[in-house]
Image (cartoon, rainbow, N blue to C red; front, side, top):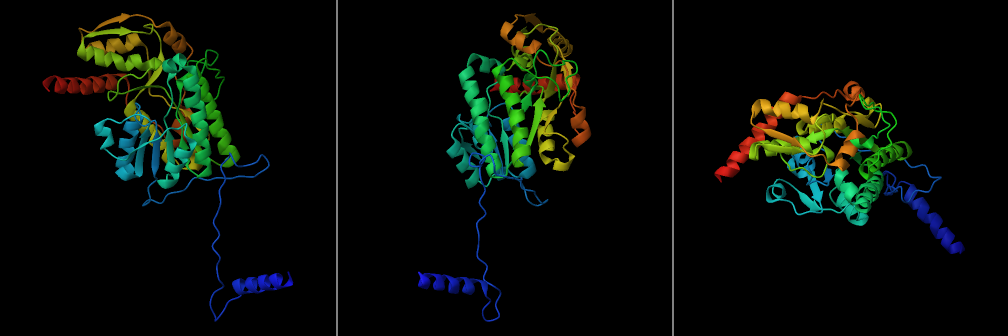
Length: 375
């Protein structure tokens, strides 16, 4: 063993001492990061998202990308950062126009290993997590909603923390409950939702904020109101009546609403929603006084929306056939959001009020309908 010790001593001296006037030999050491799954309770882990120069763009992965918001956000981000820097992912087959518009990859958020490989192989720096089952659909299949909305979220959080990603997870008016103040609803108050969708979103808010404080994860979250878009069909949400009315008004001139005419809920046109998402992701960290913000644009009832549509289409006939499950959900949600903090901290400001919303939706759907009819 003395020989081994002597050789070790010589080797150390050779590595540390300069030779022939050269600089000392630098030994490359790989920095090893740890997932929260690997960190023990006594460890001090700190993760930080990457900062970008003006010439450097983030590499973005959008999960649940074939939903109402994913395709629209991908289009906006690709315009901002370049087509190949934004990857859409989902477990469904994309339509041809989406597949050919930019990178698309199969990704199941319940498959931790596959999701991790996607992040590593594509050098992802921003992760936008849209995968979720919405309110009415979630109530019809609670076990699946629990798996997708909660277990899937845990996978996302661990991967984002391990790889220092900037993570965006949307929340919703559904994160509040019947004991929350409803008009207006502030950022911080009692929540206590009564749907698996709402419970999973409160869980996401709290877990994201915990990972931010515990691991330094750059977590950002917006509570969306009801989102209205002409690009997609209703997908099982309680606020979907505010999309369906436009399709039915143009196609049949008749609309049957599944909520009571005086049910007031906060709403937003999709362009405002997508812009808010980009703005909060780009906001300097020091401007954010919190990690979860309300955002709002307008608040209306089915009756008010129908009257505004009838200004453009006077022959529209509106009837009400109440879906008691959706009505109970809507009655537990905010009537109006207080988004003062978002407006003060990072300059949020909406563009679309109810008249602009109605005109834009009817123009879009009417044009699409005429083209389809001609074809």
